[in-house]
Amino acid sequence: MKNKIKVLRAEKNWSQAELAKELGVSRQTVNAIENGKYDPSLPLAFKISAVFKLTIEEIFLSE
Amino acid sequence: MFDLQRIKERSKLLRPIFVPLILYIGLLVFSSNWVEGNPDGPNNFWIALSPMLPGIFFGLGVVKAISRLDELERKIRLEGMAFSFMITLLLVVSFGLVEPLGFPRINSAYIAGVMVVLWLIGKLWAMRKYHEE
Image (cartoon, rainbow over all chains, first blue to last red; front, side, top):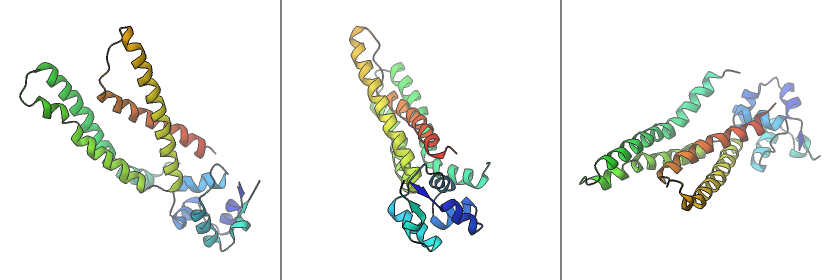
């Protein structure tokens, strides 16, 4: 699954570590999600959408 | 990147696992040698079982550490465990099949050590899969 997290994070000038802290996960997890290596669970996807104030559909794109 | 904070957090998280594990291995070697050297010792039952005391703390440490991980880290550990379980099963069954051919009997207590080493290998393999950039 593709996502726009890297772009959204860059817009906010956040590092992966800062976003990871916001989400309560490790930096490695943020990195894996950004690179499409790992698809987050629904609760984590909701957390991501809340952090960026966007809907899940606006962040995650099905391939 | 060298992340000192992460290393500190990791070592704090892993201490309840590795301290009992080292004690387990030490007591396992000691108790095995003791029981072999003193086959009629009066306290052999308790000495032989002594590695299980740190073994219990090892188990509790693993459960505690896993519950503190985030979802991807937990998935990585779980895949490592699945890898370890399957390889250990294959090794033990293979050894069981060749034992009647004259191969030496293996001490079942050492299987735990093999499982832990394989778990670490499995974890590294799973980490590569998810953390590769």
